[in-house]
Amino acid sequence: MAKDTLVLENDEGLTVEVSPLGGAILSARWRGIPVLAPMPAPGLASEVLGAEACFPLVPFGNRIEDNGFHFEGRDYTLTPNTSDPLVLHGDGWLRRWSILHQDRHSLALGYRQEANAATPFAYEAVQTMAIDGANLTLTLTVTSHTEQALPYGLGLHLYFPRTPGTRLFARAGRYWTERENHLPGAIQPVPRDLDFTSGTPLPPGWLNNAFEGWDRKMRIEWPETGLALSLDADESFRFFVLYSPSTDADFFCFEPMSHRPNAHRQPESGGLARLAPGETLEGTVTLRIHEFGP
Image 1 (cartoon, rainbow, N blue to C red):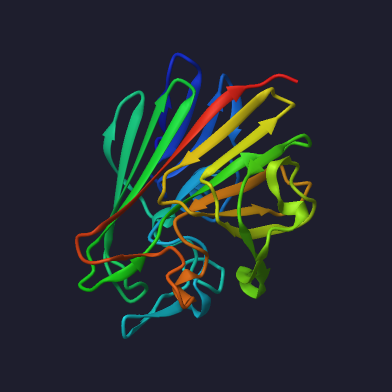
Image 2: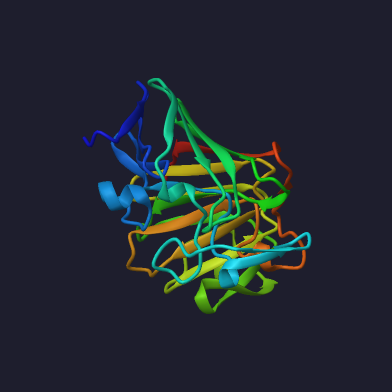
């Protein structure tokens, strides 16, 4: 095991591996069966350790068009932070976090960002993880330290196993099409093949869409393993992004977010929180693992 791997485990059978590199979860297993999917990703943990299964999105998720935005009379510019031409997923997933607390069943990581030429955001983020029986609870907070108010958001980039029998249950009111540079296009009613209200397999082909009007619940069933996972998010998370590169991929991403992708460039806030210096945004997600029958 790499020296940058921290382990949460309990006697019931839940094991979660975490790295302070990018504040990333490297794996989560229930009695040896993966319930999060360790996948190569462009985050810091993957570059060093080879895979990650979840990373924090802070102080925003997804991309910002043209790497800049206008807010309360001022223009702000950001610098791309990966090989992608647009700044992606904020800062936390590409930086080392400090260990604030650790025991067998819980962990707290902290990260502090100063404003600089690459980003106007200055903030402190704290991520806590706790296991209890078959439950994993993740809480992410961001406290602004900028000299003026700025729009903040947060989210969790979760990777799940995708098997041939995988079924997804998630209710949403509308969804966004995808346009160039993986930005949201037009908002439309949810099409039939993306309506997961009653549970359905993921559609074939490329999938990268944002959904809103979410009831903050989700469930995945894996018939091959006899396991199911339910997700409950608090009221901070009103949106989610669903991503899968193809039917042949052995993973898909379900990303609870407090805001729409590219919300910085939309006329309304799109879920972003206006944080004055010292104000905090917080969100919590709980993953519950279940066994289910045929």
